[in-house]
Length: 303
View 1 (cartoon, rainbow, N blue to C red):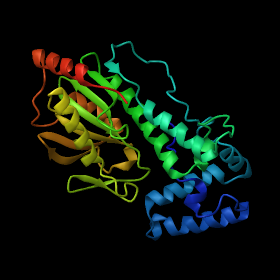
View 2: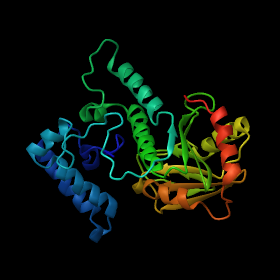
View 3: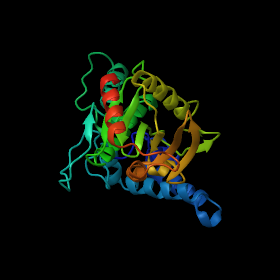
View 4: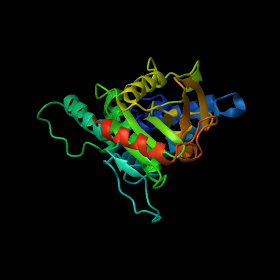
C-alpha cells in the first residue's frame, strides 16, 4: 500500500512552508532534531519522522523529486485505482461481491473536480503531487478508498470457506458497511479507516486528535443493525480496521454491542482474527452457514 494521502509532508514535519529555501530547511531540521531527540526528552516517534522528512527533502535533488510527486523510497508513488499484483499462490480465494473502495474512488474524483474547478484539465487525478496539495477532506476520501482496497486484499485471501460483500448499502451512501464477511467463525461487519493519526480507546469508542468528533464504532454498530434487521441475521463481531501504526496493540477490545464483539484491529492481523474468531463467539457451520449466506445474498444491496 502506498504512503497514506493523509501523511504529513516533510515541510509540515519540519515546520516550514514548501517555499522555504534550502538553508531555512536545514536550520529547521537541526532545530527539530534537537527538540525531538530521545536523549533530551523528545518523542521517539517524532524524532523518526524528522529524520524521514530530511531523507525526502534534505538535498536539492531529493527535494525536486519529492515536489514532483516522487520519492527516494517509492519511485512512482501514485494512488492509481486497484493496483494489480501477481498472485503468489494458487489457493482458492474467498467468494467476493461488490467493488471495494469503488464508491470512495468516485467520491474522491467528484471532490477533486469541484476543488480544481469545472472545465479545468486534470491529467492524472492520482498524481502524488496533486494529492498532496488537495484539502484534507479530499485526501481523507482517497485514504479511506485505499484502506478499503487493502482490507479487501486481506479478506479475499481467507479461503473458499468465506464469502465477502463490499460497499454494502444501509441507507445513505456515506452510511455503508465497507465489508461484510461470513465464514466458519461467524458474521462480521468491517469498517476500514485511515484517520491519518494514532487512535485510542475510551468507553468503547475510538478517540484521538485525528478522529475528531467522529464515532466510528457507534456508526458501524448502527449500520450493522440496519442490515441485521433486513436480512434477519445476527452479527458475531464489529471490526474497525486501522493502519498498523495507528493502534498501540494488535487488537483492542471495544466491548459488546447487541451481542456482537466490537474490536479495533491492526490491518496486518485482520486475517488471523477472522480465521480464529473471538472468545465466547459460537462458530457457524453446516445448514446455519448456508441459511445466513442465503439471507444475506437476498438482502444485500450495494452503494
